[in-house]
Length: 317
Image 1 (spheres, rainbow, N blue to C red):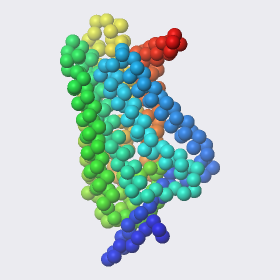
Image 2 (image 1 turned 180 degrees about the horizontal axis):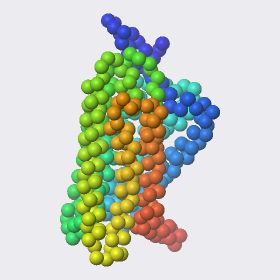
Image 3 (image 1 turned 45 degrees about the vertical axis):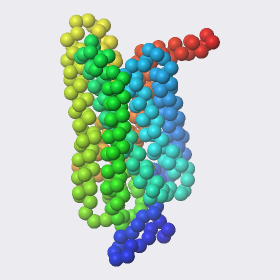
Image 4 (image 1 turned 135 degrees about the vertical axis):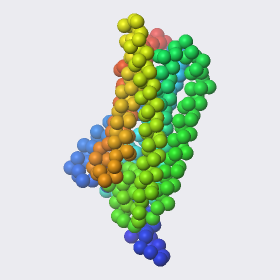
């Protein structure tokens, strides 16, 4: 077969192509799923692009909080574009193959963007902590230099982490089925296809996930313990309400993203289930990127006010 070549001296094979099975077990729902996922993808792209344009166009939103939100929206556009277009193409095509190189690239960028999002959400939590707990020091502590450094550090850390992860997996020999029971090239199903003992690789994946998922989550948790404590000590009910409203959107996004990611990558290997993994992956790669701009626009008065100000300005002109 053209997707495999024998290696001399053993039963191992060099995979040149994989097949993404995706949702092929639901043949009657292919067109319906295509319509649903296409709609979600368009909403994601439009919503996140609108957030970026609004936060750039309105001077009132040129503060660290919206600088991080702009980074998050751009990241979500990239993140969902790594997996969804290929998934949509596979839903309408009988050819569901992906090249070895294409699979490696997809794995690399999904981990790069996922790891960056974990750290970016932690940076956003730190920004909210300083704004609520140290409001007088906020302009100094969260200067443009610090904000840019935190965002750049998030992107760079994800970049380096993903390189190690991807190299570790794609240097393995694959001697089993070339069928990937997933809608994109993710590490758990790829490890199931590898030859020999992959326990070291699974441990490495677990440790890296622990660092890039659990550590930022602990930082976020510590930030919100301090934030909630500070809010409860505020004498004014209006002050408490306003402070909580500025944090609630970010907290909801954290719960959605981390909830599914933690279950996916920190669960025991013995509980592996392809169908469960596909569902969880859908949640943090497709659903959450769509919900983020909706959450931030509906629950954030400043974003809504900026939208109406810009709309009113265009009507005036």
